[in-house]
Length: 176
Ligand SMILES: Nc1ncnc2c1ncn2[C@@H]1O[C@H](COP(=O)(O)OP(=O)(O)OP(=O)(O)O)[C@@H](O)[C@H]1O
Ligand SMILES: [Mg+2]
Image (tube, rainbow, N blue to C red; front, side, top):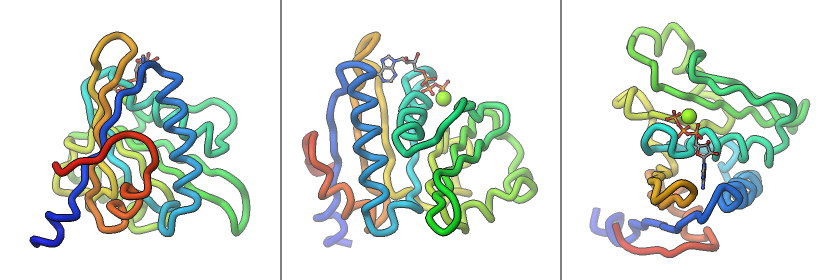
């Protein structure tokens, strides 16, 4: 445990406006495709209503190559996307658990299967399904400082998430 604590890392930065959010999303979309296991990453997005979780996801999806209209999963709980075709296809699952209130739905809606399968999982409002989700590789926490500025805090929840975070270029790192 001592070793895990030594390695624990928090990455923080401030996005000055949405274009900074977009730049981060673009960098992340690229990195996920190059990191070992990155295409199957589990990323939690936390923060108050309207802070910018969906905005970050939309920029990430666009940067990954998703075309056409990007629907928000608010009512459907999950919105599936796919980049590319055939062997190189990359599934991306965008969850919004805000309205999730029936634990039975977890089984019925096939979420267990999705989480057991391949693809990137992006999760808004993961606290609504506490205890059902597998550990996230990253928890990305957002906090509004004013209209456009966002305080960003990333914490790794898995060994591979920690390895990715250690190589993540900009921002500052410190112990939690
Ligand atoms: N730096 C920024 N990053 C992201 N969004 C920003 C930023 N500055 C302003 N915004 C605006 O803040 C709003 C964020 O809305 P968004 O739907 O992404 O929030 P959310 O966190 O997904 O909310 P909810 O909890 O309801 O799902 C958008 O209108 C976006 O344009
Ligand atoms: Mg949202």
